[in-house]
Picture 1: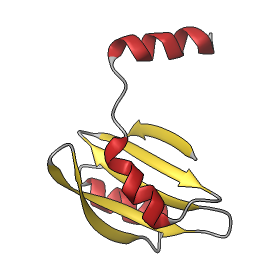
Picture 2: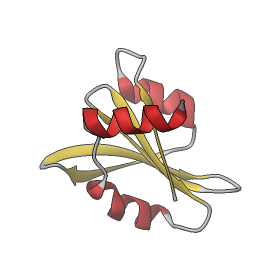
Picture 3: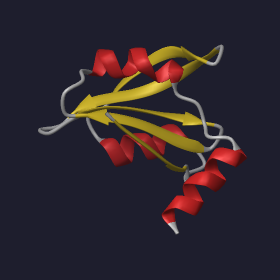
Length: 93
């Protein structure tokens, strides 16, 4: 399973998701106590689940996990805190 994140750039994140992903399905799941729209789909090589968390896109993708498995796991994903980000940045340099 791969986790990715990037800043949302469109004023309406749902428009950005539909344009970027194409053919996605919307699901509403509870993430952190909030009803959150998760965009899910499949391509030839992987399944994915993507959602917006306060202006930051978070995506899970996998060639071996189903969309159902990814959306079940999604509520366990959280944004990195500043200390974790500093550690990752230090490793990248």
